[in-house]
Length: 587
Image (tube, rainbow, N blue to C red; front, side, top):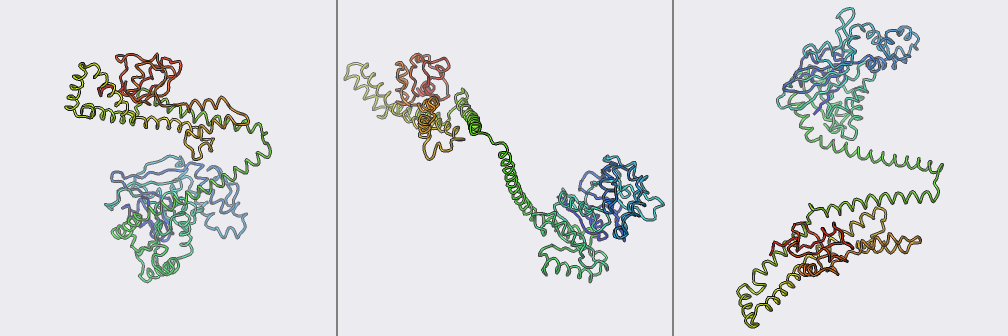
């Protein structure tokens, strides 16, 4: 969680950061009468690490980010790209040639440039672009403006520092993962300060505390203060400003009358006469660590526990809206470009037809290949049709129970009946033949219950083909079953102006999947299909060669159906089987 601390210079921003982080004046400088902190710092809590890491400018980044903004404020040219350019520039002569009114309105800017050039020797060698670790107790001279009475050429090494990251243990025990972002002070005479401020708000912080200290000359909410809130409003974007920021009245060393005056001014000017209506307003002495922990950090974390999800949702919703707007604008722009291109070079009708045909062919190839790959997956030895196996297992148990229970008569009664019939016939052969035929017929009748699974598999086969073809043939299945859709397609292919008889025949082959006893099978296959049920195999025109004696029947668990093309080949012979061959254990 990153909390940004903002506000105009000399309002107690650095003091508040000291109270929150536990650091002192050597790490977060404070002072009276003028800005003290010269480098934007980020301070992070760590139970184990106490360090300061400085990212230094390069020669070119220093000129682009520090020197050039001053030049642009004054309108000076040419803008320096290197330190040598800056050093050779005739600053005095260039300022002398500027309009007096422009010089008067930006009088401190030339003085700042002259100070930077005079003290160039104190920071030139530091413009390396490196990341440097420094002693945290020696940090002040790297991040603070030098005192005015520090010598003829003040040490301005802070100019070489691009960013400072400080890691230390915060004094508040409840803190676990907290960062404090020292946002650039508003109102300082630094070009592009507001842009840097806005960038820090947008990219680094989850919540902003705006510090205002109502001393005798600062007891009212000013236009400059309002400009800072305007930047915050721009940064929070879709999130509510009330969720994203709060105004902290720093009461340290201030008269109560000034505190009350500022609170009343904020209530009237910002909150429409009602406390905390548009902006939350907190009060605390920024120098009192205990008060800051409870009245500032505690309130901030409690507020964020409720407000962060709300802010995240608002930002995401706004992002989705903007993305949709950008998408529509992009599509409109692309449409205009395509229209312009088509107006210059429009293909002939035949070229357009060939192009569309190629696109349809490509889509059909990909979608049908995906469908065929799924069918191949189901024919592999590792594939098991769980529904089919469960149904077979269920019917097997039913048949076994029926057989063990005396074939529906009760075990004792069936044995007695068998003895009686054999005595009446004077032999066991006729009784055995009749009894076995009856048992076989009953088993076939019971196992015909597997048909619904097989019918569903056939329907799934057709549905897969329809789905593969539907990417372009959107009107293929308007309320029809998969079988009806394929028959409509075959009919349309035959009756088209330019008919496609071969493609229609291919669709007919896909439709010619019939469930039933395979004609032309040998006796063993017919007996097998009779035992398995009258419709337990797919039509196979010539499969007599694949059958063998029961001693040679393969074992296994993978469900399959009697399928073999004509004439049979070795692979189809391996595939030809039925569930009874693969589930003999019930006997």
